[in-house]
Length: 469
Image (cartoon, rainbow, N blue to C red; front, side, top):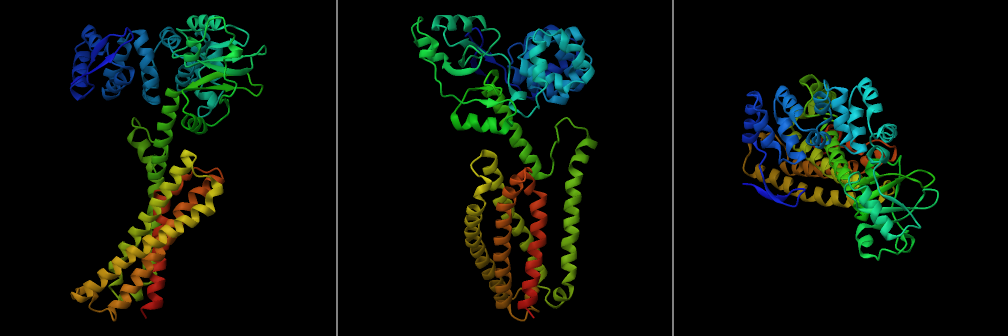
C-alpha cells in the first residue's frame, strides 16, 4: 500500500513503502551494477526513507548507492544519517565531492557533519565552502547548545523598511532560507527588536512600515543556552522558530522546529539509555564497544547482588530456624525495585519536561510519602491474606513456622516499610542529583534497583529478627 503525498511541484505521487522487500531489491540491483534502475527506485524517496534504505544495506552496498546519488539528493539525506555511519560514507570522498554536497546544505547541518569528520578533513574542506565563515562560526559552539543547533540562514529587515521591501527580501532569500516562518526586524545597529509573521506580512498593505506591524514581544535565546531548555521553550510557547542572539541583542541565527524535534528524540533516547545502563550506545557500534558500554553497570549490579547475598548470609541462623522467610526474599526485592523505578521514572520525566523543579523536593516528598503509604498498605494486606490462606491450606514450607499469623504480620509490615522507603528515595534522589547538576536519569535503572534491594532485605530481616523470635 502506498500513500499519496505532494512533491515540490505540488503533484500527487505514489511513495513506495520502505520495507525489507524494497531494501533487498535495491541491494540486489546495486550489486548487479544497475545504477539507472536503482536511481529510478530511490528518486521519489524522502530523505528520511532513503536513510532507512542506506542504514539497512550492507556497508559496501550502502557506500556504492550513496556515491551514485545526485548531489542534491545526497545532501538531503546526509543530515538524516547516524553520525558514525555518515562519517564512514564520507571517509573516502574527495574534497570536491564534499564541497558540492555541503554547498547544498544549511549551515547548521554542514557544521554537524564536519564536526563528525576527522579534523584534517574538516580543515581541508572548510575554506572551499560558500558559507565558510558561517560554518566556521557554528563549529565554535558546543553541539548541545543553541549556538550548535542554530542555522545562520534567516531573513532580517531594517525597522524602517516597508512591507513591500520586506517581501522582496523574502523572495531574494527564498532559496537560502527554507522554510520562512517569520521575518526578523532589526534596528540601525542590527539588534533584534521585533518579528513579523509571514501571514501578517502577506495580509498587510505594501506601503506600511515594519515598525508599525512588528511584534516587539518575542522569545529569543542566547547562543550558550542548553538544547534542552531550547526544546522546553518551543513546547511552552508553541514556536516554529526561535532567534538566537548575542549579549548585545544582535541576531546570530535561528533554530527551527525540525531541529528541536531531533533534540527531543535524542534527549529521550539518552534518558532511556541511562535508565537501563546503556548510555552512549549506538546501533552501529561494534560488539566490543557495546560490551564496554554495558559492562560497567553490570559490574555495579553484580556488586549489589553480592552485597544482597551477604545480607542474607548475615541472617543465616534466622533462615535456618524459619525457612519460610526464604519464600518472601524475592517478593521483597522485586517490590522494592518496582516501587522505586515507578517513582524515580515519574520524577525524571518531570525534571526533563521542566514541570518539576528542585525547589519542589519537599512538596514532592510529601506526595510520594502518602502514595507509598497507601500502596504499601494495600499490597501488604493482600500479601498477609495470602500467607494466612497458605497456612490454612497446609502449605509445606509453612509447616515449621510457629505462628502463621505473626509471619503474615511481619511480611506485611516489611513490605509496607520497603515500599515507603523505595518510593520516597526514587522520588527525591533524581531531584537532588539535578540540584547538583548530575543527570537525574542516573537515579533509575541499575542504581535504584540495587540500592532498594539492599535496603529492602535489611528491613525484612531486621523486622523478622525482632518479631519472630
